[in-house]
Amino acid sequence: MTLVHPTLERTTERPARRQTRRAGARSPYPTWFFVPAGVFYLALFVVPTGASFWFALTRWDLYSAEFIGLDNFQQFFREPALVKGFVNTFVYAFLTSGAKVVLGLALAVLLTSQIIARGWLRSVVFFPVLVSTIGVGVMFKVLLDPFDGAVNTVLSWVGVTGPGWLTDPSLALFSVAMVDVWKGVGLATLIYIAGLVAIPQEYYEAARVDGASAWQNFRSITLPLVRPATVTVVLLSLIGGLRSFDLIWTMTRGGPGFSSDVIGSVIYKQYQAGFYGLSTAGNVVLFVVIAVIIFPLSRWLNRKEVPL
Amino acid sequence: MRRRGVALGSVAILATTVVFVVPFLFVLLTASKTQQDALDLDFSLPTEWALLENVRTVLATNDGQLVRAFWNSTVLTVAAVAIMTVLAAMVGYVVQRRRSRWNPVVDALVLAGLIIPPAVVPTIWVLQGIGLFKTMAGLIAVHVAFGLSFCILLFRAFVATIPRELDEAALIDGAGPSRLFFSVIFPLLRAVVVTVVVVQAVTVFNDFTYALYFLPGADNATVQLTLYNYQSQGLNQWNLLFADVLLITIPPLIMYAFFNRQIVAGMTSGAVKG
Image: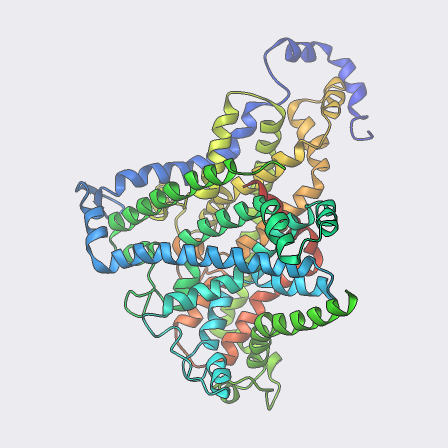
């Protein structure tokens, strides 16, 4: 209230101006408030995104663009290295998303139950979310080193010869996905905890009266009622997984060979090689992939939400 | 029930410690070793604690490149977060308060901003056109543009909880639209401003991809880029590399220590509505 008080006297001196403001169509919520944000957003997001559809059809060096039709896209889907990146993107996204849903829910159920040190456990699980991706990548690159790495050393204690996590072409993508899950599961857990806490305890009490087992509780109460959280985790982790670049780039540079390339790393590689048109075509492909997966999926997931 | 909780809790503590704490411990231990010691990459106590020395060495490398990088990252984070917070608050406020034909447009753009990956090379093209490519100002602008959507979402939800009567009172007292927003509404947004600032500060500070694309070059690098370059050189100075990792983990750690609740609230609420 003290905030508005000082303006009180001044207004009485200028009734005319106030009236014009009232009389005119000017709202106290001016449209120009959109302008500053809009300038940034239009110039650096909308315009580049729109332009990408044109530049994807060209051979381009930032200064002159020569129209070459769909050649870039043809190349994108013909060259095995690029196709590999395309396929890997899906594998990576669905794998990490699925793992985050399952592990996130399991951890959240554990961390909302009556156990000791809940607060500490939550912090520990969540902290990797805040550590920079590069830091995590560097750390795990060393831990997963095939010869000296701590992971394989531990495995050798129990008589297992650990594989070359990041050097074996058939394994590299999965190793990075594993690290991605390690880093991101804390956020999924947190979202699930928020969802679990919102479930009214009465349901569980009623179920107990009916003699339901713990599994039945989980299947028939927890799982359906925690659905909004599941939708969020699935969408967030899928979007993140499809767009992923930095962790893969830090840990394997898409290698060995092209075995762990994804669209994100292909875009960067083609950019580095000076194929700006091809790189932008990669961006358009990624745009389409995400739009085709995320929009229908979110509509479908949100529609089937059961009101209880 | 209580006994089971203790048993389960102990197992959980053990498991999460192995999975989540041990890797960080490994970083800390390796960063504390001498170079010779660190070469083994094994999980052991250093024979000689050299943490401070390593930190000093890392900070002094290349004429204090990392110190400059920390300065750059600080400037980037503060500027980008300050700009995007104010601009997003303005948008979130008007969108919530006034039903106009712009609202569907804003909604669609916010959604697009959350989902669609930025087109990198065309963004470079735009930045070059306005002379901001490879400049700190350019990177700041890029972060503002990409961060707006998330902030708008949070602000919009929060503005809904501020009673309209307050606006009316201020208007009757003669406040203009700008004054109404900046002197009356904005201060009331403090809770959500803290959340937005903290979450975005961590995001911008930790960002690697955009710095790699839009601000390449070693001299003006951000801390994430410095670590990346350091790693790319493929040296065997693990102790120094990990001291670097340790150093750039400290700012988010401090943020988490102080703003634990806001970070959690921001990340889950924004997520739930996204």
